[in-house]
Amino acid sequence: MNKKETIEIITAHENLDPSIIELVKKKFGSDAEIRIVYDKSIIGGISVRKSDELFDGTIKNQLEKLRVNLYKIK
Amino acid sequence: MDILEILGKIGFDWKMAVISVINFLVVLLIISKFIFAKIGESVEERQKIIQKGLEDADRVANELSMAEQKYNDIIKDAQKEANSIITDAEANAQTVAQDIKSKANDEAEEIKTKAQEQISKERSMMLDKLKRETADLAILATEKILKDKLDQKSDKALIEDYLNTIK
Image 1: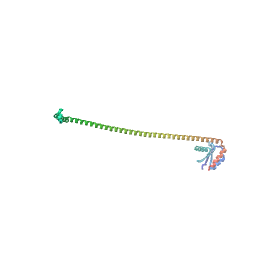
Image 2: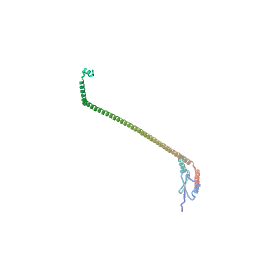
Image 3: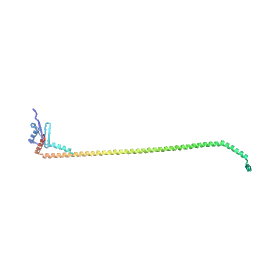
Image 4: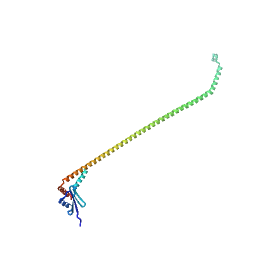
């Protein structure tokens, strides 16, 4: 029996809207097991990890990218 | 009246005169034989000594003139050599002075360049630090605003937008 694939979702707000979970399943695989982690440090947005792939759409990540770009400004 | 008669009247005896002349000639012969010859020899010897003295004097004068000429030549050569040494020394001193000046200029230029590089480096580091601190402050302020203002509804819209970008 094959082990079910797990998709880990990280959000900043508790009580994640079910429509978001559905949208994640639609994008990454409807049969996968969904595991939700709440982490306020990400501020907002979402991070989705499937196997070795990570899709980081958190505000924290966006701000870090912005910080790097600001550092690069001449 | 002839001459002999006149001379006889004044007491002149020609026989005695003849004898006197002969005597005179004999004495003259003896003198010239023994005394004049000696005097001649002596004079000749004396002339030789004087001549030798004159020759020696000429030789000494000549040697003195040559020595003087040699002295003048030596002085002239020494002066020439001294002038040459002074000229060389002046040229060397000028070269050394030029080298020192050139080296000092190079060192000054190098110090100036290093100082400018250091200033530029420090300025760049300060600007970089300022830029980083400004960026950190901007990010920190944005984080704080978003933490305070981002509600669940806005966050949901943000999440949906992000998920829809994933193919």
